[in-house]
Length: 260
Image 1 (cartoon, rainbow, N blue to C red):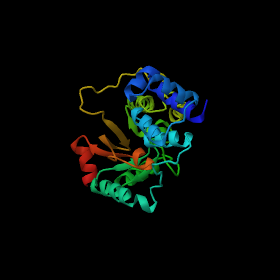
Image 2: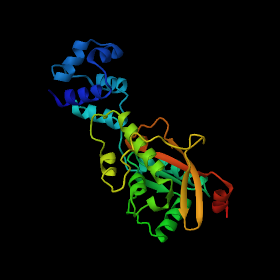
Image 3: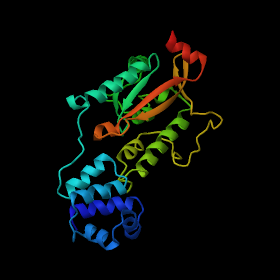
Image 4: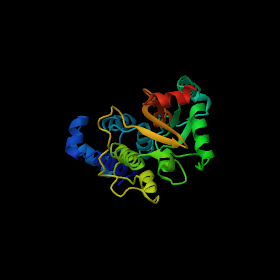
């Protein structure tokens, strides 16, 4: 079996599609799909792109399929600081600055912090002054679960922790590599104190329009919720993987904290 055939089969099976069902969706014969997976047929570049589209593969997955088939990748994977990403970087900075005085961040698909506005930086500095420890490149999920990170400051921590673990779990299941290990989740579950019932836990606060996130900073209690946005129609792997999270106050006392 070829490298392409192996990867293609894994991605098809990850979507829980039979060869027949996928062939019908692609408007090709199931025999051709079988030949592609066993390596008896070599796909054209156009066919690889068509298969990736029908698999709903992300840009990185499409690039991997092209490489496995012996073709050059079509989607760039630039660092955010690269000149070619200037317009994306400027747009992100505009979104973060425009959300002041409230916190906002950009993180990648594994919840590593990429950019934070001044309000989020100040919030993290306040937690650090109260004993929190953040690595050089903070990970929101891992810090949330860490007793030396954000965990001591979060009210209703178990509910929030279970919600985040469920989100990471389901995001992986809905991705093109659902049958491969979810390394972020595996790492998170090794942290001491993680709720054992995280997968079956029913999130509370169903009477609210959004899950409240409470931070206890000494005598100050902040109640917030967030929205998450993505880059529309991305043509770069890095851009596709970015998430922009804006935090909003849920009550007047929390609003006053940031408005001064």
